[in-house]
Image 1 (tube, one colour):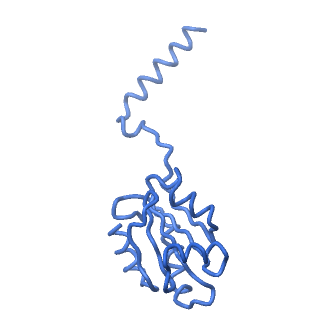
Image 2 (cartoon, rainbow, N blue to C red):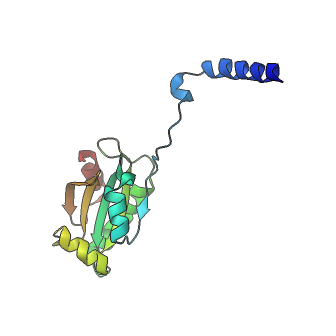
Image 3 (cartoon, rainbow, N blue to C red):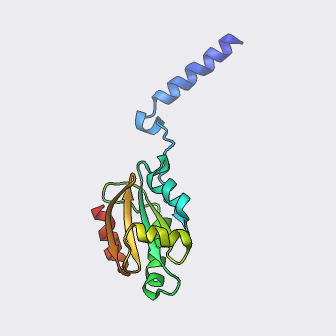
Length: 149
């Protein structure tokens, strides 16, 4: 039995050495982007500054249902969050979170970040507000924004 186990181990080690180390490595970090719709304060805090935020860029979109420019920007941000090839300028995966400024938590967060116009998108990296834009930008300008953060 021990000889059979040793034989299998040797075969596996010989097979694995045939592949370059980079192909044999395995990582548990998620490269897939996430979309957090109508997040509350708890989700905001967890995603932008908790352990979950390490190695990720989070775009937080402050919007209101009555805001027409917000409705123009939403599909662009949704496409960005669903495209696995979209990365920030630093190569980090991009998550998107929407905050409804008409909700109680949304009002509190918009006051906290001094949101004066909608839509406002703030980029957070590891808990820090690194950059923002205001207004419904076309997709190519949103991509340029991502390249800068």
